[in-house]
Image (cartoon, rainbow over all chains, first blue to last red; front, top):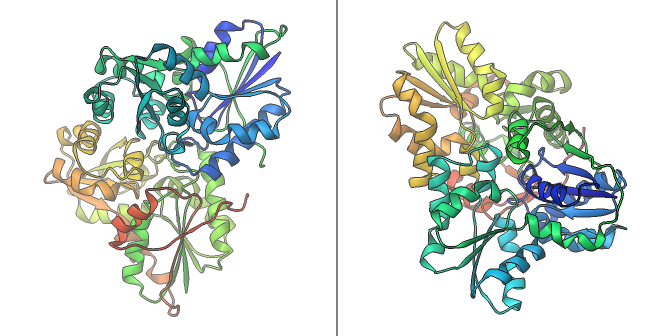
Length: 254
Length: 254
């Protein structure tokens, strides 16, 4: 069994980690598009094009299942990838929504990139289930995380500045609608005391259960479209140890 | 006379503005690679590849002169572009250094993206002229500017956090080694009172004088590789009025 996972950068590794923990035998192929991160400030057309190119790279590794571990790509490109690919495609939005619905008493907040929030995907799912939704883009969180600034005064003021309205509006549950944001969860939770903070990585790992077959050697292959000084540290921060990776300078052009 | 100018995003428009003001008749072709901004976190190889693709797009417009209005691309790709292109190529590093040397009493600070600072280009030029140099990457400044956050408390704390050591180290002149940073100049100057803050846009406009011939209709063509909600506002902030632009979804692949 081979599972392909892609993200705009390093954030999707939080999803990969959850999948790794739940499915010990599966072979996992990750692609982080660090040469073009962030996706969340790009237009819908560009996000779809980049997503198709990432999917094509993973299909060349003969994966049996594709996980879109990026909320922006999930919001804009899930439908297109389902149409185009011969394997099941699972995004991160629906699993996150399900978890939030189990927890909330009726008022859910959603934060994400500008593209994810503008797409309205989270808001539509949640409203269909009768909960009220307050959403907000937090465009500086991705560069913060990609720079490895996940705690300390700069992270704190940016988090507070972006999230203060969720305090006032009595939200009881907050969805981290971006796979980078779990790396800021400590700062976010400490600011929003008493609010359930949902990251969808474990929910995604549960969601793919029906598609996961036995077999595999439990290998993990990390690929990135560009190298950076921070990459080894970020990988270590997420996995708790150094993991080697490959740089693939050119993904296929769709 | 046609002048081509490229940058990773909107920052290079500060250079375009200075060129526009000095050469009223020249036709100006701008390319902002907003589909892949920022360049400053990418590797040298990737920056060179992206720069070649941008140059190829501008050469297809038959420009007579190419200005690299991005410090990261200037630091890593000037030599390569000079080799490959049949027209003169001018980067932003040398003009900025010349201006700083006219101003300083001996201690110059340089800030830029991680890639620009790591390249050592500014530091080498300055040291050759016998001044002491203190340099520091400020990786959050580009996303701040691209998000339009150029004043207020978030901009202030990020600027202060990054620049505090320039206060302690008695630098007399600070080079803004990134074309995005002039948009934060007010916040930077107000924090670093008494330090001369150099932005290289006017210096670049002077530097190209020997290559500029008469002729042209004074037109300005703005092209970006991706659209975004902020783009019209950023253009208005820089030019003081709305300017229309084209989105070119695919630059040539080198």
